[in-house]
Image (cartoon, rainbow, N blue to C red; front, side, top):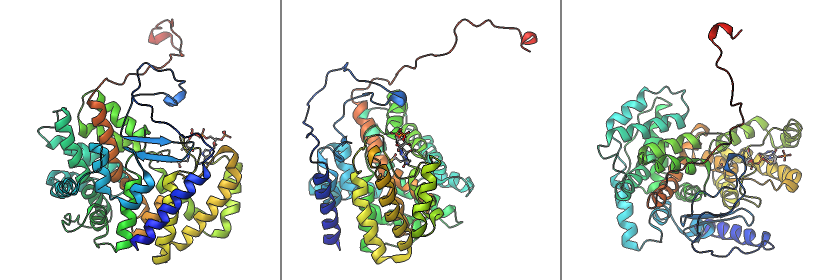
Length: 414
Ligand code: ACO
């Protein structure tokens, strides 16, 4: 099974290289001196906020690189724990470094009881991302060293948060259905433990490996909204818990991490594969955005979707309960890409991620927290890198309102 998964990923990598071969090869540029010239659009589009060695996205070629390693290699050969190590510490670990890191993560999975108490008080109707956000914030209240903003102290917090996110997510998932949260299982690695904490079952080899790969694929992605949010908060020398709390809040939105669950709602709304064409024609006519398509940076096929698409197909071969949704999805991809080729609209990471999560047994409402379980590594890696040479983020807005208005007394305002 592992070999088959590896081959699917390497084949996706070969396709990615073949389809974008006419784009110029980017070169390593070395250090950059600020200030640099760049054209800035609304929403800071095009703005350069910092330099980084954590990760690289090339939207024209459809490349994603963590610390110099391309995402196809990491997905084929690495694990989430190893990938998190690479993001945080800058290079592939030796065997003993990885063993030690995995052990440290396992030892830090337990969540303090008061956090669980807070989660119990949150209504099951609350969005799981809002519950997760509150839990992370509460963790910060319980740590007497939370205000130590040295790189060393915040690195410890980062590792603790990476370790605890599956436990928090599992608790949120179970409390929604009035089920008792489970204790982390030290026999299981990160992805398998996450699934166990949600479903109560240790997953089979296929589910574990595919979820592990999905976590690798979501771990970092440039200056996206939630990463930038985390970095902005951390740059005021606030604290890592507050910074990550803000990252969770930002990831929730449907234009960002929240798109993965919306994809599933769209697929369910379509209902049958033969409804796809008519559904899309109506969406197109009413300018409704199709969730899981388009990207601010990728104007080529998102490499993460290239990997997750075939993996979703493999999962439904073995767990056919989501076969119909998968058929709808593949037809929707054909129709949307056919119609939107000129605008360079392709599936993004969220399009097949939801199907993968559903096929491994995770309900739709929990999909964005799964994204957060992974992305916490990228958020913290980048916040820590920036903290090493910190400068508070402070862009400007251009004021477009009036300036010399008279202050009229209340009685004369009409
Ligand atoms: N469905 C239909 N049309 C689309 C879509 C889509 N999903 N995405 C972009 N377009 C069209 C726009 O309508 C626009 O057309 P126009 O030029 O005729 O007005 C054109 O493509 C450019 O789109 P913008 O929205 O300007 O692109 P932008 O870079 O601002 O937005 C975004 C990127 C927000 C991701 C957008 O593509 C979108 O809303 N997608 C759906 C939500 C989604 O899947 N988000 C997840 C992104 S990945 C992530 O954050 C993890």
